[in-house]
Structure formats: C-alpha cells, structure tokens
Length: 177
Image 1 (spheres, rainbow, N blue to C red):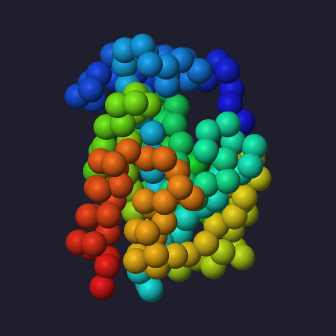
Image 2 (cartoon, rainbow, N blue to C red):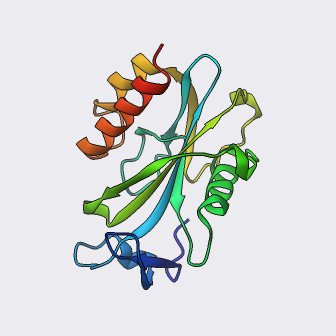
C-alpha cells in the first residue's frame, strides 16, 4: 500500500545524495532527482528464476509477470535492509544480508530510478512462501530460455530495452547452461 507521505532519499544521476523527495513525487517527469530501488532475483540449483505475477489491484502493469521482488529504498534505509524488507514483505522469505549477491546498478531515466540489482541463490519451495496479496498474485520458477521469451512479451512488466538487454546478457553469461 502506498503511503502518501513516505519519504525517499534523492540522488543525482551519478548516485550522489542530494536530499529527499516524497514518494508520490518521485516518478513525476519533472522530479529533477533520482531515487533508489532494489530488484531481487532468485535463482535455484536448476538455474530457474523465480518470478512474480503482479496483483490485479496494482496501478501499474497489473497481472503482468515481473521481478521476484522489488521496492523503494526508504529514506535512511540501507540497500541490504531494503532487500531484506522487500523479500519478507512480498514473499514471506527471510534472507540473510550475506545471501544477496550484488549484480550492479541500472539507471531507469523514465521512472527517475537508480535500480540496485541483486541475485539470491535458493531452493525455497513456492509452497513455503507467503505472498503479499496487495502486491503479488502468484509466483513460479521458470527456466532461463522461457524467461527470456517472456521478458520480451506483453505478459511481462514493461521494463526498458536497456534493462532487458542487461538482464538477458547477465543470465546468459552466468546461468544459461
């Protein structure tokens, strides 16, 4: 649920802290600053990715497949704390900070976001997850070949072409066997 007075740290394009911004203003075209979000991908021993289907009530891209979990980093919150919080909120999974493997940062100009990308290697069973119904309607494991096809379809969240290229290349180099 979106809290209208939620505050996020604000950054310039190079990632330098420049102040704060209200979340409700953070995605506006003329925001003038960026904010940080975390994207957490899960991969199992079969090199399958965990993906989530966004809840039907989501204002942006409802009922589309997306990253296993993602969210805004709150003002003053560390990146790893945000990863832990989002993973627990959306999937009901407790993940230790040392299990988040940093992949890199991507700039999403249209949304004014600096996205911090992480991978977690896990073999958690879907039945052991507790989904946040306001955010997630279902999750599934998908092999990388099928994921790459889904990524470029209308059934997947509308991420930028740069993001899709980055993710496809990363998966090919590290997990597509």
